[in-house]
Length: 420
Image 1 (cartoon, rainbow, N blue to C red):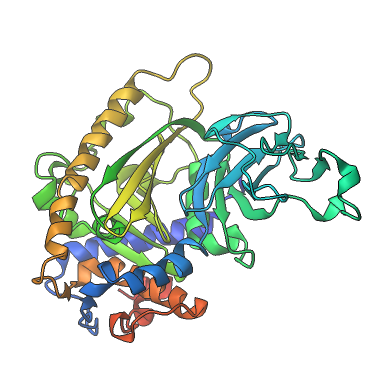
Image 2 (image 1 turned 135 degrees about the vertical axis):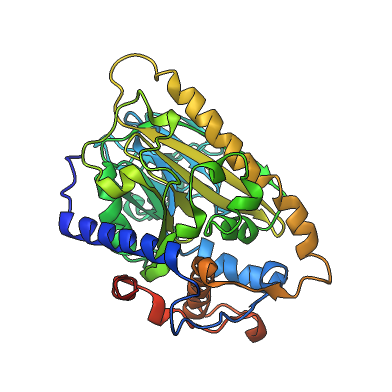
């Protein structure tokens, strides 16, 4: 894929708003005039089985979700079995180089086509009765055709799953009517284009299982209010959390930008590795963090991009996956500094996750009635508002008393951020 065209006007306009926002945040004595007191988020949203089922159907089964990087499917026939929404989805690169997704379900009697989580195949063959599909999902052969009188093989292709790319990042959605991915990303895609996602190389991925509801962990990554408590000896030493500027965007997306405590400070993990020359000054100097709704968090940098994805594995369990991407480092092995960088990031991630099981215990106690949020935690309320919009749009059944009042519309978008 060729280099993405950058909308420099939009990128620099956001940079100016973020600089103004960080200056405002550092100097303010109270929230902006007119900012509403955020209603309490009912505690039952984290516990009620009915609400969680509505969330599952309206959110996880209908959203664009990050699946993998194109480098993980390097050649025709490379495939990955992806199960993060509960459905077995087969993501495969075709002979034409296109990456597609299908349900891993034979059209004969529902048996799986692949059982390994990753591999390479010249075709997709059901091991139960031998029905055979090409890499584009078309049924091309079956055993004992004579006994399937009138079968139209052209109508028996694998059932597709929406699969689209932003650069080399591959997303899937089980909603056949989902808007195109780039339209869905909106301003997030415009801003992330400067990090050259079409040229990023895959470095590695790993994950951690955590004993908490997925929303407990998502909430934590949408604010910096916890930094002084949880990250006293790491993140709090170099970022000024009281200066965090925030923008809220359509479709539940958002961004926050936090200044460094010292001018000219550089993360040691970014020294000695290649930097992308298309990244503008604000992301180079300060600390951005995007949320692509619902479950992707990325703090991109000119020297490389980590992506965190958060997945529910049960009502009170979840998994966080960490994916790393780097500018092309040329021939040879990954530079050694990257291993140190990833280990340091994991140490900070552990600080965030180690407290989560204890939070879950408290959330399940009679003392937990709901969540009271402040102005600087408004990204959390914005996220929950979007969840409720999805539930209503899907017609999913959720107890009315667990839904929240939409109050953030007037505080969303670039216009309001500029006014601040």
